[in-house]
Length: 354
Ligand SMILES: [Zn+2]
Image (cartoon, rainbow, N blue to C red):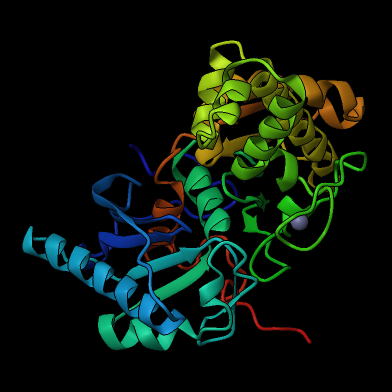
């Protein structure tokens, strides 16, 4: 992959000294811990996808995370690489120089934990942190679909839903290192299902992995027949993957859940057209593994509800070039290209304003 292609409004990433040629990117998710050795062209040279460690306390989990990252680093060093540092991104917010974990809805045991001291003691060296979706949009802008795009919006749809936005080469991060918490935009004002945030009718209640599953189960209960209704009657568990599989086999409840989910994603994106006027929207995250069930509906919804004038500025809605490793590639980029995208040296480690 050619890193010299189009970093809009910015210097092209340079080859750098050999010792800066690679970095480790870590994407800490609610269920998976992804580690990647990434080079300056955005190529993943080595990777590991592990279950996110469990434990009784945040400290215990953090120590296990540090241990897993150390193990990965030992492995790549053993293979001859000398990564310049470690970027680690999380699916929520990070506060202050000690990386206090905030609003950890999907990893609640880490709430309030200062993560940096625990990682620094075990790992040492250069480290940076930030939000996972902010990292993913950086990866997309440097190496993926967004190369050369002046106004880029990435929406990650998984257990949670978030956006990252780059405008004129700057990463927007006015809310704890992010452009705001998209998953909790209130969209379903008729359904008003309760959300993990304590609110009602948020985008995540209808379009996240758990929201799609909950919607499908509600519809299956009403339907009394079909693949999902039969599973419910037999007391069998239903996962989000089961819902996707049922939709592909024509189950009406599952299809309805994906149609509603896609509609509300399009509606949320229509609102974001008004805020950011993106030229390109990129969709990523685990739920987009079912892009065959969602992408058409999202595009249709956007066409139906968005302002035509804003829509005319949008060139497309595409699936990410890095559906699995985008956040890990972006977090490694925080080490390799620390001066790109960021207004000051460590703004992704945002300071609280109150
Ligand atoms: Zn919410």
